[in-house]
Image (tube, rainbow, N blue to C red):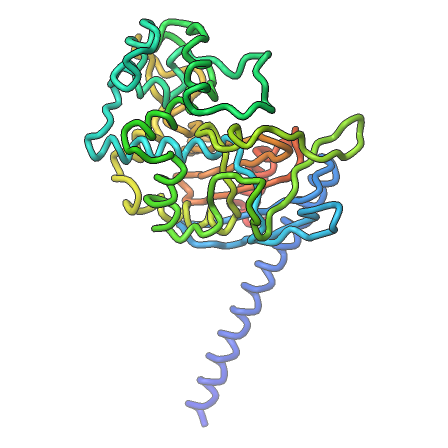
Amino acid sequence: MKIKRVCDWVVLAFVVIVLSSLAVAAGQTDAVDEYIHSEMAKQHIPGLALLVARGGQVIRAQGYGTANVELQVPVKPDTIFQSGSVGKQFTATAVMMLVEEGKIGLDDPLTKYFPDAPATWKQVTIRELLSHTAGFTDYPKDFDMRKDYTEAELLKIVEGIPLAFPPGNSWSYSNLGFLTLGIVIHKVTGEFYGDFLQERVFRPLGMSTTRIISEADIVPNRSAGYRLVKGELKNQEWVSPTLNTTADGSLYFSVLDLAKWDAALYSEKVLKRSSLEQMWTVAKLSNGQPNSGHYGFGWFIRDKNGRHIIGHEGEWQGFVTYILRRVDDKLTVAILTNLGGVKPERIADHVAEMYLSGK
């Protein structure tokens, strides 16, 4: 009888602990839900997908709101959003894979790959393109976003734009720099950079929904992008198919695929640890000082209360995304939204603090 009573008490204690844990988790879930809903209302966001992962394990993958307003389709964890510049970390990863294989050198001049480029490109290195310290600028104001350019035509446009400053002397965020890196990958491998990523990164990691944007293809669970015009919701603006394939950020993905990507970054499945650390370190200028953008290779780096944080935002065609990795806390939060002009970084930061504080 005594043994049975002891067992009963052990079982009861276990049940109490489990129920208490579930109650705490439920309380946290309610608090996060409440916060997400309030931010979506405040920022007029139609749809949002949230990922929270710790140590490479998914804690939460959840959709909120509407993926397609016209059809009233809800956002789910497998809903697909456009990446915007969050895609840059994948381009940088492809470059670093080729660096590890000895096919690209970080200090190679661009003229090694483009012999007919302007003389100023002799001073521009792959390292500087990766860190936005090359002096490259952004798409010019008269650039036609609705024209279907060839890769050669895009390269010629980039070559015709003077450098904003001597390479390595300053920092300026440049989409054209990453567009050029995509062409370098093509030159070196003979493959379109998107095919290279599919074969070497997305498929091996089981990132089954991640791919180059295509509005012509049938893409299950694809969300629609929106913008606000004088307070009224409008569909995203159209751009040419070519400009949705460039290496400055032209991907589809879901939070479920980002969870697989996050888990891989704790291992050496894609890159050696030394390469990852280099990507997550603020690149230095020619004078030895850290660049003012606090940028590594495809990632922004910052510290908050002594805690190391890496992340990146992306915005394109009615989508704004953000991935936050609190390295010391092994906590990752990703926010995908389908409205231009919103601030997902603020949401990601707050959700991370909620989980870290247990609220």
